[in-house]
Length: 432
Ligand code: HEM
Image (cartoon, rainbow, N blue to C red):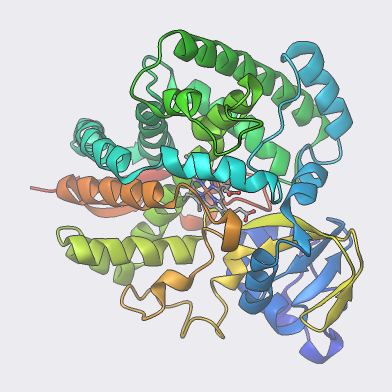
């Protein structure tokens, strides 16, 4: 269904009813901001019949859901959402061919959540981040140098994906793994959240997740035998503040290793690619980018504003534990909510002139792109650093970055939760 919402009389769409489009519509993916604005104005909280989800789009409501974990369960939302209607079949395939079903153990509610979260926070220590920044700057410089003279590249396959995977490999201490292989596994895992996966695709993805699991089992076993200076070894060594259960089990380490391996890959590469599009298509943003790249403070603010504007994770889910009123609408218990981070970050009641790219805005840190409350992204310091390094090293070697195809010819992957591209043709000049 695709409707020109510019033609619709607002009065004919009372709040609480259905908007004249569904978020699963490819037209919405192409022009999200317009549709999000429509939702915030007319249907801030409503039930989407196609997705069978309650959609929440205003900043205030999204923030409330994120902070109130007692009413809005992440754990139940994860289990209901993952696998997209094929969960039983997917679990059966994982048990038959993949060594078992190992759910994401950080996607749980308190009290289980604290136990795991404390551990993960420890793995992202400032010391480890500092070490990673040094090695990541060197590998990024090398990669960008290789393509800088060429004048054109695929922003996904040549920069965003290898950068992100290289980084993750450094973090977990992996060598000699093909980034394309990790990308295939990440995409298969990510598709379970996409809300747009067909049954046929699920069968292909299930086999890829089985491969990923076998790879992870072998990796964790190897690291148990030969611990080193990396995040997986940190998890193996970790002592928990829990007398009855002081160590992580094998499956818990496997689940967390998988999170480290692929959890943030898609989000970072999606974020980077969307930032490249922004720089390539908006002269004002490009001007600010080239002017900020050599100034650490300005670049950090540029990155933060770019994260707000691109919101790489556009939406995730929760389940209500009881009947609750949200945004003036009564939602029943056990309702499945989709909260739109992307829309909340464009809400004019939270951000003045939200569509303006303004790295100097006063409340720059209040965006919800990393979530909020107890589940706020554990990798956010890492993400900020990684994006900063990539943008800085690119600006040192490239200028006049633009799209190699008209913007309406970019190929977007079908997903309600992420804004990923299949490829991103870029052209640029070598900076002298
Ligand atoms: C641009 C990149 C990223 C974005 C936009 C992002 C966004 C988010 C968001 C919105 C959440 C909250 C989920 C919720 O409330 O349901 C989250 C949680 C999380 N993120 Fe990220 N993320 C990124 C990269 C990463 C990376 C690189 C890692 C790890 C290497 C990571 C690990 C996690 C984990 C483990 C959680 C769950 C935390 C918890 O439940 O306590 N993320 N992220």
